[in-house]
Image (cartoon, rainbow, N blue to C red):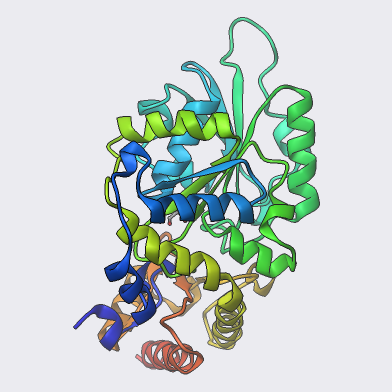
Length: 352
Ligand SMILES: Cc1ncc(COP(=O)(O)O)c(C=O)c1O
């Protein structure tokens, strides 16, 4: 039995299980050696991703981390600096790879709700002088995971890219959850991401595939990405078995994300009503809910442990903050149950 059969698992949208349709497609997938470019299912997935994003090409990679780090490698030179928001995934959760693999440092910038503007970035671009590392790349994250799934508006992304390009600076989008942003904005991903030099998105999060992410961009960029992917050990041979599930995620996943957003809102409004739990409802825009539990007299670790004892899984962000993520394997009834459990935990503690 998997965790999802018995638990209400709100730790992440990465925990989703492949549907029966995915499993059937995986079993029947036509495959070949992808390092030779001969896997027809991967070729179809890459062509479809490029088409949906209005790009010349796309490449299937094992993870979002690999997609981001390939892009960083291709856009920068060793000794340069990368600007991003301070809670960004590329800075905090990608194993220092900008330094390790690309020889760059990351200069993090704090932005309210994780939403960067051109003014914030422009103020931190290194001056062209010989004794400071030169800015080589800007990276945006949309939706912004650790800021609570917040969405950078399309106009802000467009302005950042246009202004950066005037200074010959490329801009990469960590769009792990860009379909959630597109759902929130009510606009196609191709439209909201068109100004970026490269876009990474994950099939394995809210879209529901078991494995895989895509990097999209120009034909030239993606051709170079194939070499970097191979160098990182990402040449996966007959991975059409995975791409078959990815194709289903890409075709059908986006249309149901609004359900996850509605469940996140339900959770957030319920959390706001629990004494001692603080949440800024304005931050709850997509499928991620981050709340401050310090007013309950318990740490986030204690709250998460107590929830677990009641069959509800959540994550900690820091000692004060708890994170819940909705996805296709949690229903609105499960979210209500999670709220009842948390209310009971907070009530018990308050009466001690
Ligand atoms: C914003 C963001 N970018 C990138 C990633 C990396 O994806 P993966 O876990 O597939 O490496 C994640 C994963 O949670 C993420 O949230």
